[in-house]
View 1 (tube, rainbow, N blue to C red):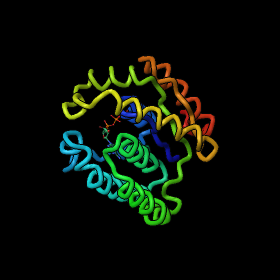
View 2 (view 1 turned 90 degrees about the horizontal axis):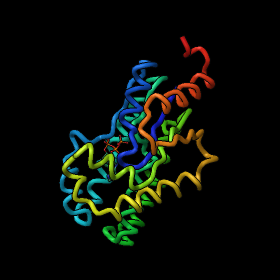
View 3 (view 1 turned 45 degrees about the vertical axis):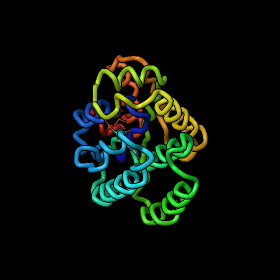
View 4 (view 1 turned 90 degrees about the vertical axis):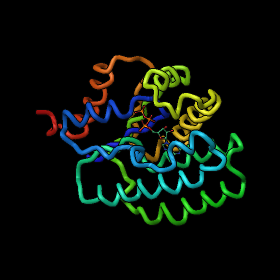
Length: 205
Ligand SMILES: Nc1ncnc2c1ncn2[C@@H]1O[C@H](COP(=O)(O)OP(=O)(O)OP(=O)(O)O)[C@@H](O)[C@H]1O
């Protein structure tokens, strides 16, 4: 089964990915952050670095999808579907120009998507939905320095854009929406695993 975690920064995707992986022993494809040469600069100056950051992210995720093609069972900690959401936020907040926004979207629609073919198909997309206040609380608790100075408006627009994406495309993917506002991991996992087992009862040992 190809499982994807979908949701704004601080939603808890990494934790849920790890919990599912512990149970099903599926490999996780993590967010390409650790060796990302643009990550620090992006948070320091989005306008100057957003385009470079996006090219890096798309390339890293395309490489992951190529590798994952060989595997039947995988977990994606965020998907390539979500990168344009970050780009739209930059455009909304005017840290990306109209021209760059158009170029990115042309590139994404005409180069990235056709090249992916069925590699970006997911059996289940788990949307961890939460309020912006809660997301910010988690970002602060986690304390990743690059994210701490980012204005609230960025997280707010990002979260709204996630909701819009879901509303517009909910019939295109097999979404499971999880209320990620509360911290009860067991409760969230129970709903998720019940869904996974209902899709494939043989996974339940
Ligand atoms: N396309 C993108 N453009 C800009 N920033 C991105 C993009 N994709 C991911 N990021 C950034 O990369 C970081 C991702 O970190 P991480 O893997 O911890 O995910 P997260 O969204 O914080 O997840 P979690 O739900 O686990 O809290 C965040 O700072 C996020 O804003």
